[in-house]
Length: 236
Length: 104
Figure 1: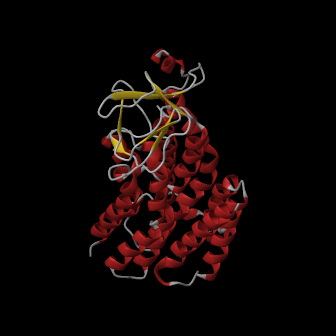
Figure 2: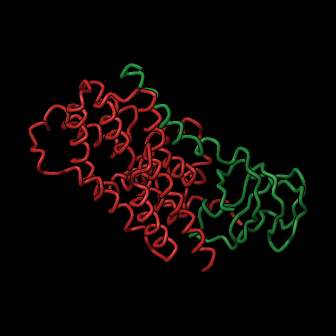
Figure 3: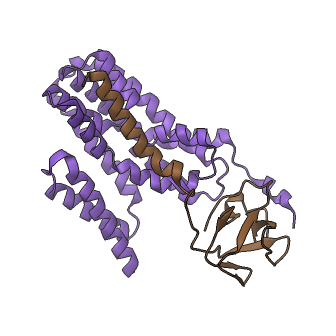
């Protein structure tokens, strides 16, 4: 039995990186107008351009940035704004828990960096790759490629929205791209009864709980979906 | 609260949410499952405190590091390797040259 067998892999950091970039590309179709709309909305809400861009850089979470900018525009106290962003982004804790086993062996500096890039879109493409690919040596490069692609696109589209996008007519209703992005993320992952049940129950719960304060309905709907999926999986 | 302080606080909160499990995973973990498709290299028996590499059996050009299994320096409640059952307090260590990954 030779340990030399380990050297038979074909994956490289470079190949994984570009695979991640390539996998992320289709999702950018929805991200670009989404980022531009955020930029327009942030300026309209009264955020200075530098602060609007900084929000994309520091928070880097589209849906919470939308809500935060809107709350800022109606003078909601900052602490409530921060708390609301935190609640909306609580789902990232679920992503983090899901990704953690695959990143466990990485040095801390990699973990610190990749956590910053953990978004809906980067998670969606990376977790599928992690589950399908048995060679885990360079999987973090795939995540890095996907995350960096999204990050770059988000920053640029936000900047475009801030400085150029104000001329887009509001009656184009481009904010609907947010829903399209999430639909595009969910559909490919529905492969069995459990995932279908999770998606349907979470969707229904999200509508029913829509008016819950501080967007907590979103979090509760996520929990409903998780529990439903687990119950169906356990029974089957 | 100033606009910038609000953005920084929200960013830190979001980042902490993303980082939490990624950073902490495995640090306080007690493995509760064995590795069903693993074998022990170089020998079939485990001794406390010795170093082993766990590899898929049989090795072939297709097997990968992802198949090197179970947790380094973690106590498990029960081990089922190569049809041997090991007692509760057995600790397995990996070969130090292998960048092993948990599949357990």
